[in-house]
Length: 599
Image (cartoon, rainbow, N blue to C red; front, side, top):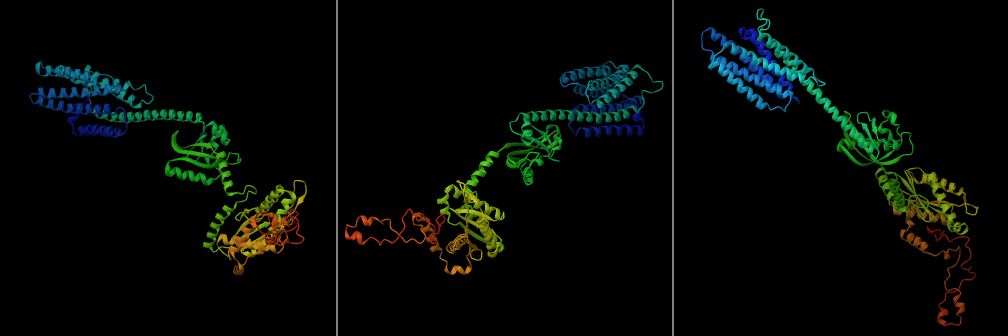
């Protein structure tokens, strides 16, 4: 390919060498990536370097020949290097075309034949014409094979590099054919020195184009694999029995939802791009918590969220499992859902059963004491004030006896409802037992609590409850109040409030009484408990206003008047005008106060 004029001029040599170096640098750059024809391009470059060296040897041979020196060895070296260069071009061509051909056998055969021919025409039967022909034939064969190899790849969709390689090697092969046939020597058009550096620069562009083609082919392959992967994901999502949604992490837009998700969230599948996943979270805070867990854990399992449909219907509970995946050239959130509304409802029901009174739906005694203990501890740290109100339905037993227990239940339900309506959300009202209710007022002093209690008492007095037989039932309550001025112990507060309630009963009922710090001087918690215990265990038969104590043996002594003196003498004196046991009771002894309806 090259002309000895390259070495005849220093400038020609430098330009050609720089062009060859540029081609080498280009090869190094394109070889950094996953280039499919990396080794064939390397073999092409090695062949070009060897061919460049042979031009220099040819120049030196001509110099020696003109000096009359022996040149057989130099000619042999030149042809041997040309043969080796040709073999590198053959290997490169075979690997570009296919990897299935037995390149070892082909290269070995060509090498043996070429080496034998060189040795024969240089040393055994020297023939200058055959030597000149072999110089051109080896080079022509090399670039003709490269042209064919590049042409075999132009059927690909990305073929700019291979097309350029085919044209440049084909044009060079044409020049070499014309040289071999003796055309153009009179004008030296086909033997100019600049053909070699020009070809090197063209091949550098070809190498870059081949690398770009290879990257484009790899990108197409990746896109095809991604498309197949996305199709598999879509099939899995569509066939899943669980609702599944895929949303972009960048803008939270939903890009895929299966039929179960469409039904669950009320999504219009034809306008999918207008929905965002956050639109379906009833609590925006839970969406932030899910994002935070995804950032730290990459995958979230069994995350409970309260969601709603796009139209904002009643919220419902879902169990969510989410992870981030690559989908359609983007990072997305893959979320699967399971409806657990019925399970959450059961949990709420069980919790209510543990903390709520089944009749009135108010909190029960255990919850009240636990929660108020926490509130008192917080108030103690903040120097806050609070009050405890103990309320009791007046003459509740008379309501039960007169109107029946169902009506009595209605009275308690109405009382509970009135208390909840009259109090703030941060206050706590609970059924403490029987017809007794307890209230915790947060951040109020005893004076304000007294005002609240009076308003509540008046509200209750105006309530009207229909009985089963159509009669209207009215009732009243008595209220006792204790405050943080008295104690910061829940048990003491309840006992002192109950003491004030007992005082309200004694003073005529339907009233509010206060337990003040000075009342602690005469307060005996043990006596109070004994009284409540006694009242709670006393049989209703003894609940008679102003009745003297009677004996269950009354009336028995008369039948045994003739009995032994000891029996008669040990009988307690029978009260006069004592009403019979079954007589109706019009009012109660205030000392028989308890929380079982015996006031």
